[in-house]
Image (cartoon, rainbow, N blue to C red; front, top):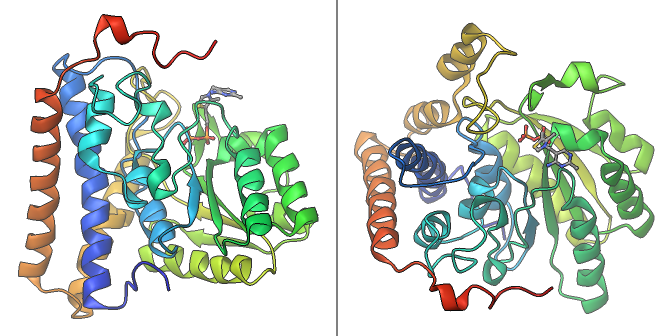
Length: 324
Ligand SMILES: Cc1ncc(C[n+]2csc(CCOP(=O)(O)OP(=O)(O)O)c2C)c(N)n1
């Protein structure tokens, strides 16, 4: 059974709270960064929350995911603890990688998250290998592989889809098409006009879906997961979405207009749309919405406070996690 059904009151609340957690987690990161408390760079997925939330909500506990450089949403939606994520970003011993990896290296193997990956398309072949293992080990698990539109012009994308097709591997490829790979618009870099359309070359179904529509993402991935679990093979899902923030902290947004960003924010925001829809459909009332908001706010505030109070790794432990 999928983790939640967004058409029930409980599922609607879970979906809302997860999207809010992702957004508030990243807003907290921005705040910490601007105050000089958090160092390095990071890639925020604010605006894209319905993709990981809908996709991971359609999976079962025990299923696997692979992630990207923009992976906070994948982590949270697949069950990671925001406190341990925050500790990782604040370079604390209690973080997922003992504070040594930061944003782009968080893995949460206990919940089936095989990890973020700083190499564009780098997790795609890992996902196919993991899916092949599930077949050999007869676990009945499926693997959801998240990647960006920029990854679809890397060799690894084509190798991964080809091998998944040849092996009939239980993978769901979820492309988060947020319209840009750094400053390059999808249309300027992608032949053929459609990422989902590439699925046909590898013998699998391809679906384009509104990535800011929680239910559309959930249902498409649920269908793909069912297909993968029953041995019918992989699916490619192209989820159309948008990132409001720059590519990373050094982006000055010179390749797009403020109007474009504002249009997505005001007309297509996934959280605003879901909040409105659940109330219109009577799944949650205003108090239920506020309770989800308050719960997410409390969890993020506790995560920041607790992580902040933790120790940084000692100098003596510097080499503990070095393998070469
Ligand atoms: C193999 C490789 N090439 C280039 C880079 C530099 N790089 C980091 S993120 C990025 C853009 C990726 O775009 P996309 O896959 O669409 O993901 P998004 O950032 O939009 O989420 C690039 C080119 C990299 N990390 N790895």
